[in-house]
Structure formats: C-alpha cells, structure tokens
Length: 530
Ligand SMILES: Nc1ncnc2c1ncn2[C@@H]1O[C@H](COP(=O)(O)OP(=O)(O)O)[C@@H](O)[C@H]1O
Ligand SMILES: [Mg+2]
Image 1: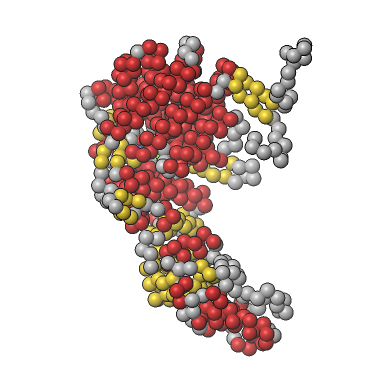
Image 2: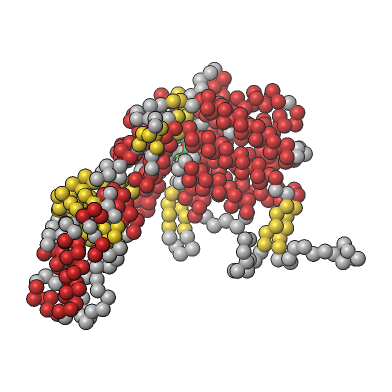
C-alpha cells in the first residue's frame, strides 16, 4: 500500500493461484493427465476413442496421439503433455510410461507436502533419485549386436504389441526391421539411421496381410493416360515442380486428346508451346516424368506418343523423397532438365489393380517405402502409428546397441535399488528419495491391473523374485506368471527408459517449484511473447 492506495500489478482478468494452491492445482492436473492414459499401458491396455470438434474419430492406444489430440487448458497439464511429446520426438515409444511416471511422482509429492516437507527438498530428492536411476539402468542394460535381426524383431514386436494389429504383427515386425536395417549406415564404427529414408504409404481396401516393403518409392497415383506404358525398365526419371501447362488457352472444355486430329482445336501458337513443354522432357532423355503440378492433356498426348510414363500432381513430400531415392534434381521448369538432373531406377510400373506407381531398383538403395494395407482408414492409421513406433525403437536399438527388458522388470529393480540407496542418504531428503523409488511401482501395478491381475499380489511376487537376484523377472501379462523377460523376448531400447526417467523427474521437479501461477484469461491477438 502506498499512501493508502493498493498497488495493482496484475490486470483484473488474471487468475492467480499462489503457494500450496498452485502446487495442488499442478498436482491435480498431472494426476488427471496420467490417469487419462494409464488404462492404455501395456499389451493388454485399452484403446481410446478421440472425437475432434469437427467430428473426426481416431481410435488409438498410442499415448502420444491421445495426449496431443486432447484439448487441455491447464498449464500444468500442458507441461505433462510436453513430456509425452518430447518422449515421442526423442524415442518414438514409451510416452504412456513417461506420463504415468509424472503422475506417480506428483502423487508421491502430494503426500510429502502434506507431511510438511518443502517442495525444494522433494525436488532435491527427486533429482538425486533420477541420477541414481540412470546409473542403475546403465548397469542393467544388455549390449547387443546392432545387426542381430532376431533381437531387433523382438524389440519391434514389444513396441507394436497392444495396438489392434495382432494378426499381422509377425509380418510387420519383419518389414519394420528389414527396412531399418536397409537404411542403417555405419560410419566410423558408429551406426546412424536417418528416418527420412523410410516413407510409409497407406492403401485402404485391402487385407492387412498385404503389407509390403518396397526398396524404392511408391506413389498413390496412376499414370496420366492409358496410352502411356504401364511399365518402364531402365527408367530415367524427370522431376518437374511447375505445371506442364500453358496458362492461357482458347479451349474452354477439357478434351481428351488421343489422336493428332484433335490437336487442331488448339491454335498453332498454343500447340507449339505445349509441344515445347513435352519436348523438353523427351529431349532430356527421360522416359518417366513426375510432375508436382498438373499436366495439360495435349502435353500428355505428346509424352504418350514418345513412350513416356507421366504422373501429375505428385505431392511435394513424394517429390522430395523421389529426389533422394533416385538421386535426381527437382527442376522448376521442364526447360531446365538435363541428363544430369534425371534420376535412374531399374523399373517404374503401374501396379495391377491398384492406383499405385511403384519405383524400384533406385540409385540410392537406402530409400525404402513401407506399404501398408488395411480395410478401413481407422485401422490403417493405427497400423501406421504402430509401424512408426516399431521403426523408431529399432533405430534406437541399432544406434545405441543397448537394451533393457520390459514387463515391469526394470521398474521393480529400480524401486528396490533406489530404496536401498535412500537409506544411505539420511535426513529429510531420504524421504523424498524413498518417494521417488516408490513412484516406479506404478508401472508393474498398472501392467497387472490392465491385464486383469491383482496389483498388490503381482508387486509382491515381482519384488520376491528380484530379491532373489532375478533381475529380468517381469510380468507375463497373458498368464500372470512372473518370468524372465529376456528369455520371453520382451525387450525395449535402453534409450526409451532413459528418456522417460529423465523427463518425468524433470517435469515433476519443475512443476513442484511453481508456487505462483498466473493465468491470463484473455490474450489480445496482437500481444507478443505471452
Ligand atoms: N509382452 C509383454 N509382456 C509384458 N509387458 C510388456 C509386453 N510388451 C510390452 N510390455 C510393457 O508394456 C509397457 C509399454 O506399454 P505401451 O502401451 O506401449 O506404452 P508406452 O507408450 O509407454 O510405450 C512397457 O512397460 C513394456 O515393458
Ligand atoms: Mg509402446
């Protein structure tokens, strides 16, 4: 108060939460987000149906998809979703795990705060616990030969379980692993995988079992006219970005040109200009043309007459992938085509009974396409999410050459080892480390619960097995037995657990440090840096 006048710093429309209220609010938000995805965890988790404002429906089991699609307001909730997004970007799998962990950490913190332990102490304990946890998982990690196809198949399989694609999983595992192995590069003893080299294409209306791996490019297009060859071997492919049309034409109606007589509908000048466009392609030596824009019928006619297989309206993404796979240059205008700008492929063909153009035997053998087929769009989308997760974890495992076992085994080991570690620390921070350790219970108990088993019984059985030194003991979610997860082939990349441990603790610490939250109700459209 200055001279009896209150100093107003905040605008009226700012909602403010302070101290415990801000903490409580963030804890509640994190718990709410975690509980929204908890039931999807593991192979026997449930799916969620998401309905957008415009009525689009997505059915998924994928944590990242669920969280990025649901609309949230609360800043604390947004931060938890950010954890999922980061997990998805960095690893491609383990998003549900990361978010469920944040929820558990916040729940534990809530109890500590009730016992009057200061959030700073909790933060300190969580950080110490996290550092220790990272050490423990390094010790637990299993080194693999990055080109061991069998183990990679198991990694892909673990990441793809739980999505509604069980019937074709075996086949997809193979496709996923083979495509990543094809594009993996070994440089200076290090393996790198550039996922720009894999493209996923979806085709509705076919059996899922027809999925295939194409060493090259697939366009979901047909050739411009049936007068063009269905198949070109020894292909020289031109990639043109601009339309193969002339801007002004006297001819209003679109006419199909299949004979030279019909060309007389054009003025001599127009005919000349159109022929020039076609000739630029033909003279460059190309026998295949992918055009990012439209092709005029007359140009198509000339191209067909010269035996060129042309495709129009090829999306930019496909053009770029074609340039990479074919080692070709995308030219802006047909006049800029030279022999050097063309790409070569063993074969370009229109697939029988499908609107697909397949380009195989490309110059760059490191470009592959996974062609997915399925009866409905929903199914295809979920199939794609599974394959994306699968390829990402195989990449991670090949790059790092390190695995951990799944089924709650690592988390059980962590909670026991961390509990021991807490005992060596002492003081109030010990309580925080104990709470941190206990948070890991959420993974095995949720796996048990989602599979229809008693959480407590399974946790006790797991702990008993680990106490006997069985580091790989995890839950068989189908039988409820505690078994060796490595023998069972339930394996995950080390990177996935590492990231989820790190990002969940960091998010929790950050959220706990907040003791003042100001939510601006309205943002003026032009306001900067809000
Ligand atoms: N066959 C299996 N048996 C037991 N646990 C499994 C199996 N496959 C996957 N899991 C476990 O399921 C969890 C991952 O579930 P998932 O729904 O894919 O969530 P996330 O988004 O975290 O990857 C991991 O803890 C993993 O170890
Ligand atoms: Mg997963």
